[in-house]
Image 1 (cartoon, rainbow, N blue to C red):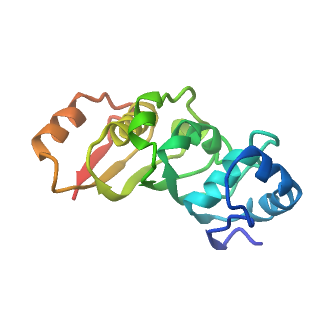
Image 2 (spheres, rainbow, N blue to C red):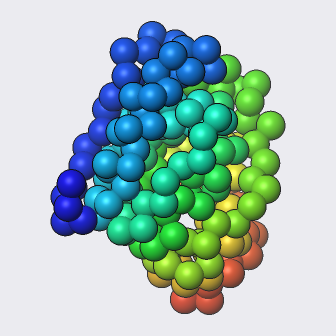
Length: 190
């Protein structure tokens, strides 16, 4: 593939489950696939593909996605802690559009979210973050927003599509309490 390619990935590699054993059985296939897509400039990653990459990375290092500047990714809360590790493979990422998929264990795992590292792209290249699904301001969403605001050095804009169900004032107050690493960052609420 060429670096000008826009790639929309929704592959489960024939896996019904996203556990270590199943991923090990497809390790060679995944190993051959990832370097081939590592040169794209723009990528859309479905939650099932992200789950496969997450499990694969437990056994093999990920290739560098050195040309990737724009990524749309759907994540499950159960692997949200791993997002910074994945972003380490995307050193020049400028735009990330995040959607959080509903998890069966969603409420149990929200309290377990801890981001332990700050990838290079947050320090040097990430300019725009957008939450594409409706933002309700729940704990997982707020932790992710806080992570981006506190760690993105040149962030210009963070966009949220606010859910009607939660009071806007409450979310505004929470957002105002979050320190921003980038003094020029705007928070846009739609």
